[in-house]
Image (tube, rainbow, N blue to C red; front, side, top):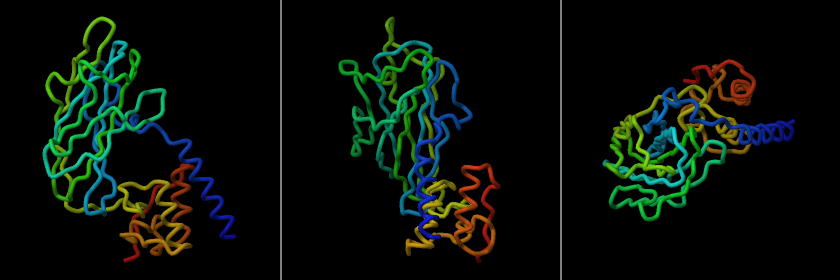
Length: 246
């Protein structure tokens, strides 16, 4: 019985990875024409000593572009861990051409003499994720460097008509975990199912908050919580319920 359950859950995890949606489509400001702007930040690993802040950058160009340059600077007791690039129609990739200067608090990709060749076509949205580690209760201030954000088109350098690439992200001192967020990642996802199965059957780490792990509101943490999450994520079942363990 247990082996069959674990095998089924492994299939669920594989399906989730294969069918994961484009997270950029969840942002309400996405698809503004001829624009470049920061999207809504998200928080992950909220129970660690430093919170992972994922800050999206959206770009919509009305022109075909073949060369790209961008540069950001940030302030605060933070570190930029990774920059991810998403181009519509292709897989997300770690931006190997991006440089991160953690001493100078600077991120840049390309220059006028050596631009990046990301090649988004006309109307295509270029999506960056800037991923930072920020201490609890601290703030991350980040902005684009003037005249260091442009695309080269066949006719001229393209600057967005609307640009809002200056923001401050405040990280709360404490987080109230969402129902179902057993692994303390910041949201209820398939990773919480894996976390619960590992905790219940394999002696894995206990949930940081048992109430958050009590996804079905039964006042205990059991395999039924993992089943409830699977139904919610993949079958349109009811959302996780606030727990009542203690």
